Each structure stands twice: as structure tokens, then as C-alpha cells.
Image (cartoon, rainbow, N blue to C red; front, top):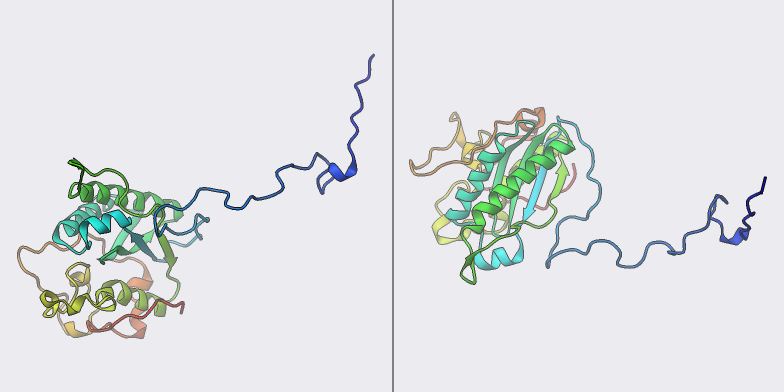
Length: 255
């Protein structure tokens, strides 16, 4: 029986286990991987941290620069209606629920409760697709309705893990318009809370007293969101005091 030809390899050409030839690629190349899109791409493409269903998630969606340029600001009635329609679509996903949100000039803040990482991803995908379809209908490019993504390719997500941080996030999301000085605009100077948010539905305002929520005009339609279920967003945050309508939130910091 003929024997196979013996293969000789220099030890220096084997990998560190000494079992197979070393790759000629020479390791990771500079600039390898999918390049970011736009002036300010989404969050880095790293595996998202796992979280429990008891931990709310603070999500930030940034609009693409060309969308912001075309609209000048997301804080207009037509975009509000588009985002509200998207909250109705996501309302069918009970395993990922929007509890609060606010629309700023270039981005949208959301507080979401989700069963797990996959449920969050599915829910946010449904929200972004619906919102993009609605917002693209407002934009005409070269005589045609705009198509394509409206938000950056990857959203930013932070896990809420403590009562103090939960209170800070609630204030940050609903009072974010004061941080960006939107409350100084002439039309907004008489507003107690931001109508481009779910603030009118929130029952934790210090100024409400015995009332459950603010009243609004008959023509105003609040966002279609879920009532909070997690302990952190129902009871836990209250350990650190009710939230004032005039609070100007600072940059979020872990607590």
C-alpha cells in the first residue's frame, strides 16, 4: 500500500498552537470593517449589554443630517404626528413598550421597557421603520418623495439600574427641551411641560398636586404609549423626590 507523501512545515510557520499554518493576513487591518455613515453615525457596532426585564432602557435615535437639514427641526406638528403613528405601531409589541419619549431638534429620546435584548431590537426596528415612512412622506427630493432611512444606522441604548438613575432619566427625557433652551422660544414661554413629549401623561410632576395629569386642548393628541410596569419607573424613582417642571437636566451620569 502506497504511503501518502509526508508534509513538512517549519515551526515558525505554524500558529501558536502548532497545529496549522499561520494566517498570512497579519491580524486586523487598519480601517477594516463597515465604515460609519454620515457626519455622526450611530453607536459603535458592539454587542449590546444584556439586561433584565425589570430594567428600563433609555434609547436615543439621531436623525440623519440630510433629514434635519430638510426639516430644520424635528419639533414640528407633522413630525409629531409621524412619531405618534409609530408609537401606535410599536404598541402592538407588548414585549417592548415605549413608556415615555420626547422629540428634540435632531434626535428622539425614548424610555422603553423590554423583555430582553431581542425584543428591544424588534420593537425599535418596527418604530424606526414606521416613523421613517411617515417622515419621508413630508420630504420631496428632486420632485420625488424621499426614500431611505431617517435615523442613524444604530441607536444608543443605556440600561437603567437604580432608582436615582431612573429619576434622572425621567427628568432628562421629559425636560430635555429646557436643556436645549426650546422653552425660551416665544411660542413656548407659556408652556409648563413640553407638548413634543409624553410629559402631559406623567403623574410625577411636583406641580400637579392632587391632580393626576395636565389638561390639554381638544385638538391635542398625546402620544400612544404604555403605562410603566417596572418597579424602577413606577415606584423606585419616587424615593428621590417628585420632578419639577422647571428642572433643567444635566448630562446623564451613572448613579
